Image (cartoon, rainbow, N blue to C red; front, side):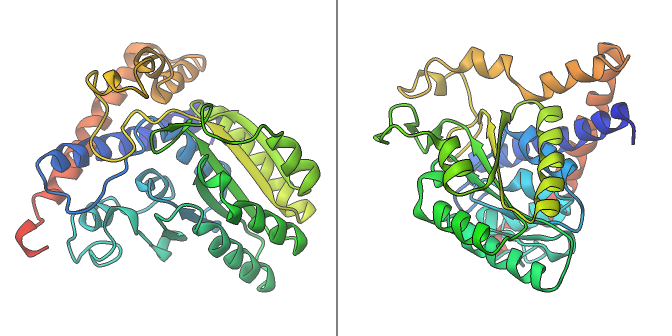
Length: 316
């Protein structure tokens, strides 16, 4: 695909993730989701950029906020919707719900809600793939809070020691639940230096709201990790538009103590808005792009409710 085709495909994937999650959010408000819910609205460029920058045979591991990871990896929309709402036609037969998804058909090997717990599991899979002499990567998504866990440094150390093809993606949305990372009681240290010099890992930090930057960084890291037989960390600065858990963001949410100044920053840094600007640079007009978006919104709204209306909530 040329650059324009890549951007338009990315636009579809990001619109798909957002529309599906927005509709899940609407039904969550009606008490139709019988579990916790963590939305990735606003972080679509992270999942999509990494998925585009890696290969279909590569493995993905998610966390508690992984609808976007699953869909970006090529997961079946209906199977995910069924899973979130507890239907036995879901990717885990309705037993996992929103935070426990797994689909080997697309090499999405699990989402685990306990912070940092997917890191050692992912390194084990990377070891298995290495022993089988498969030329692929294992990618594990974590948040900035998980990067403060011991398992993060232990996994990096072991993966580096055994030269495992592992890429850790940090989606840094500035908050561990409601704790601002800049105000957390973490002693000042040079994170980049610890990873690069202390643990001998590849490290790159880019704007996670910009699909092109994430795509380019993940593509380069994949090539370097497999060539040099080294572990890598991709640090993405992003914004979650939703609260930590629950329904989508609103102006009312902005009045909360910990997010009161973010509303206009969120509007400005919408990853879909940034992607539209990049598409315009390929020669398309804003009117053409908006027509495409409108069609995509109708398409995925229809897919969501066609699937949702087949769910018998009473049987959950």
